[in-house]
Image 1 (tube, rainbow, N blue to C red):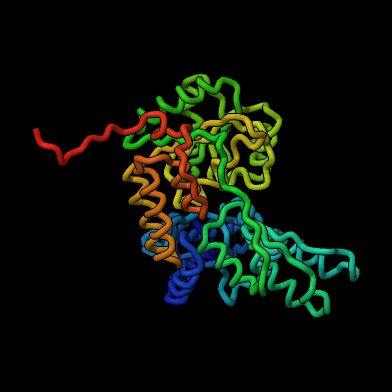
Image 2: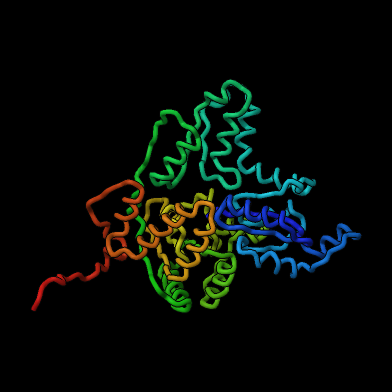
Length: 398
């Protein structure tokens, strides 16, 4: 899911704001609007006239169908560091120093590659390894900026596009976006036979908690990640697990950078074994002994699911994955998809994920087929293979 964030006061809400929100929402799937705190406005601008309170402006913005989430901010350049987003949308008049610093911070996430090449001597680099899915500035944008530099080798230096998960549609999109001419494509196997695949359907919240506690206790002192759809879910789940003497930490973009770094460091160094996190957790983390992954909610696509379970068992040892699936997840994810800028593609991916969850054939064969691999053997390591459904010939008559 691609998240867009935009900032403003919105004290005199007008048509220009609505048009900004509409245009911003078309850039992604989920729109976050940050409303500036009224007390902070009066503190920094004592003579400012504020018509509506912070809560009233939040209520006004929240009522708009195009808006998915509303947060309160003080300094834009500091608040932006604590929000989980992909695209920063700004209006034409938002050009003061705070916004300039925020834009600079965003660009640094991918611009470092561009600047490193821009300032390098000729022949210093033989090639550029480009992660297509970098946050903030993706590999597509960084590649275009490199190719647009006014130095001769900007057009000739080889750029290798890399991504962990890509189906045929995504691979074609990469070739088109990067305008690759007669590229060589290398695809490694997607098969991870050391991962067990289990799906539980239709459980109540109480039943899910009981299943999670049982699952974690079976993996005593082993490291694992529980992926949740929302920030609130990560924190409430940490509290509920503590009632069963299971120590866990929450990780999401709403936490301060210090808290996020501490949670990540504690997990990597085995000071804490359980992390309840949003999808941002795990990017760039190389921890080989993650033994299990739980999805508290269904992911929006098979690509997301495969990438997240792939953070377990990187050392090749046996590891377990568990996904909880409910109709509520489908309804919420469908709303996100229908309001996204890529409605048809998002709905198609969601439908494939739903079919995977509801399937009664080997799950590994479904995953491999999705990514273009075929196998004629069942894995023996998913819930369907371990407990195959009973079938009978309904055409016979007694």
